[in-house]
Image 1 (cartoon, rainbow, N blue to C red):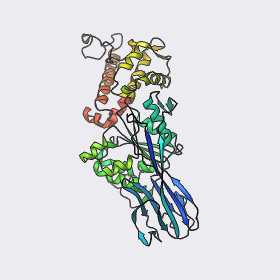
Image 2: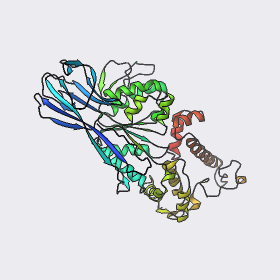
Image 3: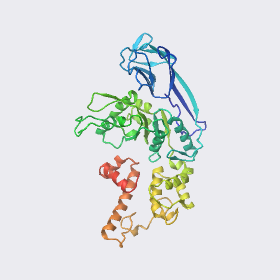
Amino acid sequence: MSEITSIIGEADLQQKQLQLRRIRVEVLDGPDGGLDRTFENDVVRIGATPGNHIQLQDVTVSRRHAEISRTRDGIVLRDLGSTNGTFVGAVRIKEVYLGENRTFRVGKTEMRFTLDDEVVEIVPANETRFEGLVGRSVAMREVFSVLDRVARTELTVLVVGETGTGKELVSRAIHQRSSRKNGPFIVFDCGAVAANLVESELFGHERGAFTGAVASRAGVFEQAHGGTLFLDELGELPLELQPALLRVLEQREVRRVGDRKVRSVDVRVVAATNRDLQEMVREGTFREDLFYRLNVVEVPLPPLRERSEDLRLLVEHLIRTAPFEHSVRGCTEEVYRLFEDYAWPGNVRQLRNTVLRCLPFCDGDLIDLHALPEGLAGVPTPDPTESSVPGLPLPDIDLSMREAKDQIVAAFERKYLEDLIERCEGNISRAARAAGVDRKTIARLMKRHGIR
């Protein structure tokens, strides 16, 4: 288990550091005497079966006997309903905080807990790529260094940054570099599901649990078993459901809606938000205990306007990985300079959409000013008298009326959606409410027009 005591990516004059605190567990007496293990997990389970982090041969130890877990206030030893009990000294305990070098007993096995600290200097990586992430700036190479370090652990990671900075890409990169890479990677958008369905989506439900539950269904925690669960838009999670999420994170067990059975889950959690969760904690709209449970490693992503030195590399990467065939290999110097001067309020997502939209309109092998969309800084916009609807093209009279109409409607939909999604900071549910349509309609139109 590890605890990060510094925030990654914070600009200061000192060398940035990660301070890691690991759990070390030794067997002092019993059939497994001499066993000595160190963990970076948030939870270390002790029992007689292979599913535990520490599997003991002691016949007096239950299948799932006890666990050591990290909380904001310290290390907790918790008995899991064992037959022969968990003891600290002569006292049988249900739950107790463990001090440094404290001994305890499970069944007839005597054990000792210690913390194994390590301070790691954050040195910018030499590479300019990390899985699907690209950047040569110091800020991004520091992020790559941290991700490479934490991906190999079981630490819970909180990725923070503005809309469009690449938070989901970071979570996928962590998954791909981890020992769980062959397991599932499940994405759950906390803001994209109706409040009354969030519990069912997270934890699952049984048939008949509520109106419309015509069949039993596993929630995202069960779906992610053996892999990674990415909780996006964490700040949108309803306050009343936060205790249930905290309980699952601490106990690694879920109970489906309408079911009494408890199911164990083995999941690594990566969460993301574009909101200030600490401010939400102060306002009472986000639970403090859940914040500290998820904020084990915080990885802030810099906005694109603060890493303009990455733009050329990013554009080349986006051109090379475009999901359709084209003959473009780069941009003119004039376009590169314009890109570097532009603020990019939608960050890398906006840059990607801009580049992909330019590719079909290039006459040669370079993106020039004429291929750029209207409204980009430094590019003159057409005379509004050219169309009765500003920003929309004049109808092409060489087309049939229906074809011309479809062309105008498509241009309107694309422009409307781009502006709407930007105004709603990428939150699809909020955009749907503002537009007066359901979320599926917005998602379908975004897919149709290649908007992400």
